[in-house]
Length: 414
Ligand SMILES: [Zn+2]
Image (cartoon, rainbow, N blue to C red; front, side):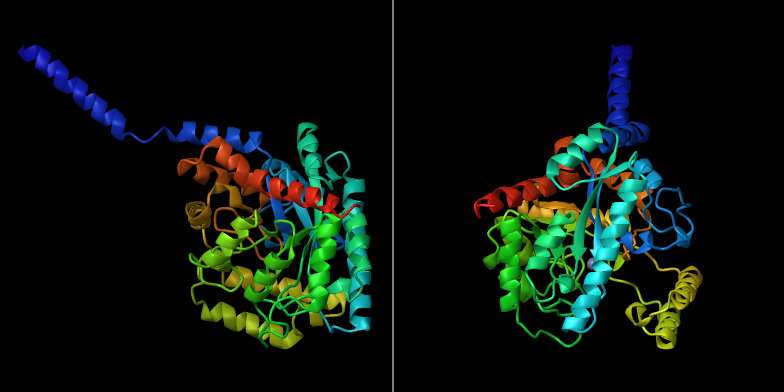
């Protein structure tokens, strides 16, 4: 009897130990890696094309992630990080809202399109231009990367709607209506001068309709709250925020309030979580770093003010030196997944995705370039997200919106 109870106690103890032992870390990592490879992974925003036309940088070559000069995305690192589809942004810095300003922007826009098409030609064994949702799926099956194109800032459209179709025909599938300043389409969430249109301009309303007609996705990242609500009223199709987070978790005008997220979900759209540290976690003060950057911009003006390539190269070098001397304390993948949890609790797992903003300021302490994208999946698995949830977050939700936008465009009789 004595011996039996001893056996019973030791069995009970061993059960307790097993129950308290965390799931084997190695198994968890293997499961996360398996899921990461199995699902289609889509990033809806990067600014890497700004580097493409530079003679001193080659996207087809592996660059050391630890070197600031490497940028966040190249094709070998995309393969390494298991990222299947990238939206390469045609980003246009904004100048005057005049005929001359628009003309100059259109020339730059065409140069960037040419650089993206050139990448697909040069490295056609690794990446292909993708323009429809199904392209990403068959390219993944074929072992190739998908290059989608988005336009960040509707500035180059000017006041001529026909440019939307022109850019659509060049491969663009979304337009972020504005950038950090108000433009002819709508107000920005960050214009220091405050709103001018109080939402979409009359021309902006026509832009949304033309994008609906063509089957182009309207991107509400960067636009003001008033413009956001205007877009939801005007758009017949669901919309995306290609790179924004939750304002309830990190209070920043670039992020969406809970009410906006609820309205976005009602619209059937999706919020693509951004890896820009300051939109993930409120930045901690770093006076030495801020002073060094203030000196740099005082010396040269901001990027858009620098006209010469040689001066631009000097500024870039000084910029990297400041980054190295006064490193920024960055948010982590855990902080990012707190945003995902928040949106999932608020509206469900169908309305959230990933839009890194790599090479436009995006990068977290433990997901600082495209080779580390698997860390997001690992954290999702750790928090109990299923393979099905992760498939939705990594691309399924975005593709649902993309398909719906195309379907609604058919109503216009194209
Ligand atoms: Zn942006």
